[in-house]
Image 1 (cartoon, helix red, strand yellow):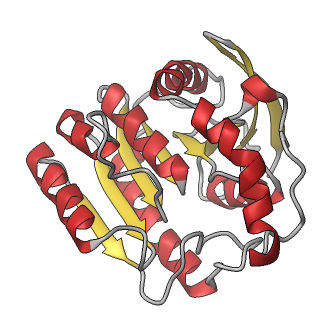
Image 2 (tube, rainbow, N blue to C red; image 1 turned 180 degrees about the vertical axis):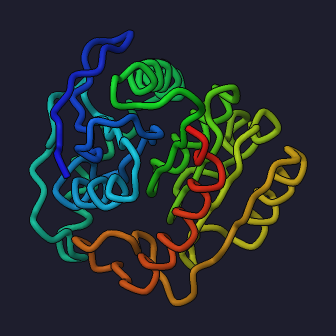
Length: 249
């Protein structure tokens, strides 16, 4: 499965990115993949390769491109609990600088780029995200309801907040089908109820599911939270969603 290094033009410059896609000279449905807070690294390359192996063109941008090319900070091979707080101390200024306005400007550029690649078929795309990337996926899907047919988020962060523009409050703008796969402590029962009510109001097909016995970050094999069974459950939910919504591309 080839990995192609790319530069995506955005309003604020050039975002470094990579894409994984089947090397068969055909066009494939497009998927925009937002990383977790730790950003682009080998773990995400493997995730994109595996998804591409199911017949998708998977675009993975460096969320922090304004601060330099990936990896923007030096990451250990395994992000264990012993180094997690130190890594987040470096990451938090980047996360805090990634405002909603920047997220939406970037989403415009990422979708424009994805949908004009010669390897990508005509038709709607999917947007998926991990950790804070789940909130970015939801913002992208609500800002571009005419383009995004599926949105999926796993062990989400910042999806339900008190902010007036919290991603869950934008759900009525959705047209995409949705799956949110939660770790056991990702959302309080009250916050999950708020999310479900917002998705009910949107009138779209959706599932929110707490994956049993999981910690935040359960899909990432380079963290202590990794759960092989939960990663498999993630594939069991994600692949049928993409097949249902993008099969005709």
